[in-house]
Image (cartoon, rainbow, N blue to C red; front, side, top):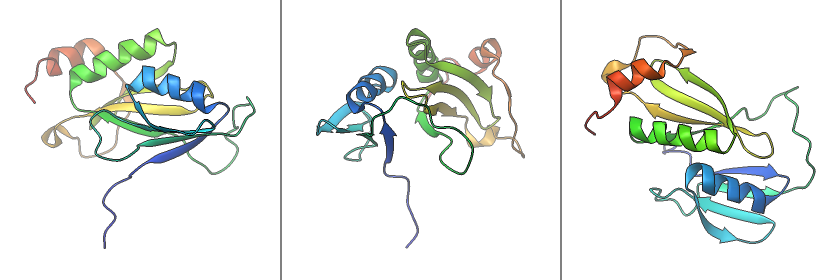
Length: 152
């Protein structure tokens, strides 16, 4: 039986309620279940019970990147305009930390209140994908000229 997709991710955070408020504001997530020290959230268009679990473990120190572990989660939006809107939201929250053009996707990088990085990406149509992997600065003017208003 092949694995179909990632069903959900769980993050250890210093305060599940604070993290839930952030993901509500940043990604429009909705609370599926709130157990106080654990909050389960879903994306508006998701068919999963929850896409993200947030478990309070306390502490406020950002985990170091000294060994193996999760680097980030990537959340995909459906349209280029959704990426533009999400960029504005992340800027308003002071959470945006980077932007990249990966050839096959355009990506935003941000950090939640505990410093856990995540990506929000829009995947280009497969016929536009390059042969290899690339990372370059995201040129918003060029991207807007090429992708804004493109039919779904």
